[in-house]
Image (cartoon, rainbow, N blue to C red):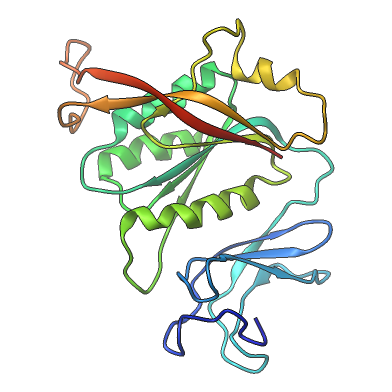
Amino acid sequence: MEKRTGSRGGPKMNISLLSAYEFPEQLNVMITSRDKYGYEYNVHCLRREGAEFMSLSDTPTGPYEFPVPITDRTQPEPTHFFSVCLAPIYGTEPKWLLLAELVEHYKLQGATYFYVYSKYMDEYSRILLDDYVRTGEAEAIILHDRFWRKDYRWQSVELQECLTRARGHSHWVAFIDLDERLTPTDYPGTRTDYLKNITDEKIGGIQFRQRWILKNETLPAEYKDKDQDWYRHHRQIFDHMIVGK
């Protein structure tokens, strides 16, 4: 970074900070500035005893951005065994029904924590997400930058950030879109049961077949009652990736 290797953003592109994590061997600072230093959003820094906040600058003596708090990831054992990283939510259509279905589906599969990323979310869906945060089952990560980009391009930020965020916090983490479901077919147990049978430490990632939910109508804006006419699901099977830590 000091030598500006791979820098593509130009002098007018500031560094937008998202988070920082302390691991036993280093500090990792996550940025959202697209293509400022190639395709990387993860900056590796030396640890400093007693540091509680972290920031970055383009040059050793240049101005630095508003710092972000450092999250401790130095604990010897992960807090969760199986968690879910949800791809960024965006768009104006309500998401609460798909979000509730996703969380409850993966809880049945043994997931105990959810990292939920969003660029835009309607107020009613955010009420639901905030309740999952209140119960300690999820955390909400809001993506931001000073420069516009197409909404789907936020997923590359989420992939790098959530892999770093989950390190030391979750042993296994599944990277999932809002309309994707991992459903066991031939295996009699849950995804957590399956993962617990993996003892080879050289295995760092597993690929499953998945079900992809397609819909043919707009989601309801709010919940009314149990007799409400829900939209119909059409499910197809595609490849999906689940990553181990």
